[in-house]
Image (cartoon, rainbow, N blue to C red):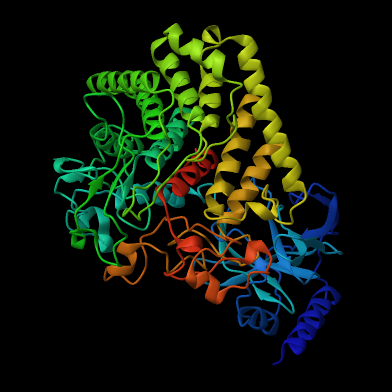
Amino acid sequence: MKMTGRVLLVSILLFCAVFNGYEFPSGRRQKVKTGIRREITATGGRVYAGVDWGEDLMKTIVEQKISKRIHINQLGYRPQDRKVAVIDGHGGEFFLVRVGSEDEQEVVFTGMTTEKPVNDGASGAQLYYADFSQVTENGRYFLYLPGVGRSYPFRIDPEVYREAKKALLKMMYYQRCGIALEPKYAGNWSHKACHLKDAFFFDDRNQHKDTTGGWHDAGDFGKYTVPAVVTLADLLLAYELFPEAFCDSLHILESGNGIPDLLDECRYALDWLLKMQDPATGGVYHKVSTKKFPGFIMPEADLNRRYITKVSPSATGGFAAIMAASARIYSGIDPEFAGRALAAAEKAWQWLEDNPDAPNFKNPPGMETGEYGDWNNQDERFWAAVELYRATGKELYHSYVLLSHRANLDLTALGWQSVGGFGVVSYLLMDEGRQNQRIAGFLRKELLRHARILALRAGNDGYGLSLTGNDYYWGSNGLVMRRAMTLIIANLLAPEEEYIQIAQDHLHYLFGRNVLGKCYVTGFGGNPVLNPHHRPSGADSAKAPIPGMVAGGPNSRLQDPTAQRYLRRNDPPARAYIDHQGSWSTNEVTTYWNSPAVFVTAYFDR
């Protein structure tokens, strides 16, 4: 039957159901907040349970193909959540269908989408909204629109984010360097131990040292201090704020030792970071990697010599900050380690004091792996001073905070290149009696002002995102999650339910409610990332990639040959993504795009 015929059949059968005495509660006009900060009305009413819709109608619905024009969170929703699907280019009546334990199907809700479309600039789409928030019963569902098709399936479940949260965190385990990932922990993605030999200093090839351990940063096998520090900052902040969200049963090597697996995983990276400190000066080496990126091989097959690059102020400042924070967080778990971490942090601070004008890092000639360069290291110094003051109470660190908080730094940023926001958040979480109230008030005002700006931007976006067109750059999904982090933190400082809803809209986007209908996390949703730019996933024998990895996402700059070949430069920025192994600028993965997603899912699954 052609689509138009099927649509007509649905309408006729629906009319017959009503004519023969089946009742629909009168649809009530609902205010539907869609993240675009305008009042939109939609009509909906729950269908009486047990209504016989007729065999022909249900067969028509069942036979419909999945349409990528219906955009939903492909994981699903908690019962109390607002539940709004976004439909690209088509409005009208919609049906919510529940799928039973034996795949029996029942229409449980009908409604009308918004009448007029919203023109969304970032996606170039005309969007309609279907609200089914009245449905709160646990179960499996899909949405059906005559003339469009079916949505990907999803669940309503209080623990709908539970498995994704655990997988997002376990991605760090799969990125471990220097140990074998055994089948009993890694399953189909096990591999032998890798990179066990000493690394050589790039500027003195006669000198070498042990740099085993830590995480492979991204889709390659390099280990970089700056992004590792930010990954740790996200994870430890998530634990500090939401400890109840983390278990000791992630099924990693350390599971069952009585310590939350998040702390075990962070410890694995922290132990490596300690090896990256120069014991003589306290400075911290910027990275350890081969000269060039390897091909798509397994980690243990990467036998090229690895090199340690120079000490850098950004690496040293970030190291000092995260070691001081770790000393505080691990003090009640492992006092010996906490003591070593704090000593290392103070030694790194001394290097910063001794080298106020140290040059920022640049790759030396012949080194082609990730640079993680930074034009300004004042933010790392500020953050380090905050964490050291919080850990030690010493006024010399507080004095630096008071003098530097208005320096040339972004006080709200939570990314690897700008970390000032971590310093602000840590200062505001400190005991009030230790704060300078004038400075705390200023920092709080700055953070809340930024959250308000993000909320206003989200109100102008069809998917409720705080991104502007220029924000769809390399790693835009990481930015999506960092913005959600900021909104959650702002709500903790000054409760505002709108911030939480917008943060959740960002999470909906990551899990499939976007113009491409793509779940940007491997192993989850009906349309997940299948071909990430990730060497182990491309080189192993497993058909599916390692689960729980966040892809970089749309990047309108088209910064690799694959993106340039398959994508069009003038397309709307939210469409500038391709699920292709060759596209490192849209489809690579990194630990520091996963870590803010761990924070956000932890908030919504506690």
